[in-house]
Length: 268
Image (cartoon, rainbow, N blue to C red):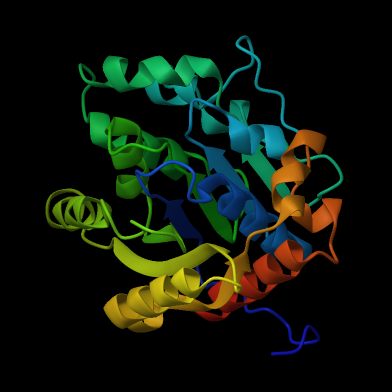
């Protein structure tokens, strides 16, 4: 599809949790760059940083020192979401709800709270001050209560899978959790998208992994492969997504193509 095509706006806000309990698979890179690409095409996008490391907040140049109001206070203290959301500098359609290191304690503090699994869903439901086309939730690399909150709040799950050995290891557990949450807490949840990341076309292993994932998951897997790219890893240190840091790079063009695919896969 050419870039001249208008990207469809979803009929209602698409809430997408980007999850994989394995670290280092490109979750934050995917969340931030898909969000930036969608926003550059006129979609209004909110990134909710649910990882205590706050890497998505860093990449979106959103302040997240310890004294900044963040997602932790929304989940634990019932602070309204509107009080923490900030517009991303120079990206008029892109917003970020930042995470500080305080969020690391939320796993423990949520345990004793009423309806602990649905705190994020409730906060997003009450936050109607702005019409977002997409809310993208960057999950931590675990299957704890923060990820459960994301899955209860979302309609869709996007799983980044790196094209490397052991890529599918641990995925069964995540998919079982998605099924459990679907049965008990969020019947509309579905696995909508799998993104293959860190693809190195020079290695036979990468193409074998890609084939294996496509054999398992079929059309759920995006056609676009995200390549290994120095630019992708450099961009966050400049407080930018790769979409603005180096729009002509292979990583930026791949994420733009991936975002286009996601936009055209509007919910049925």
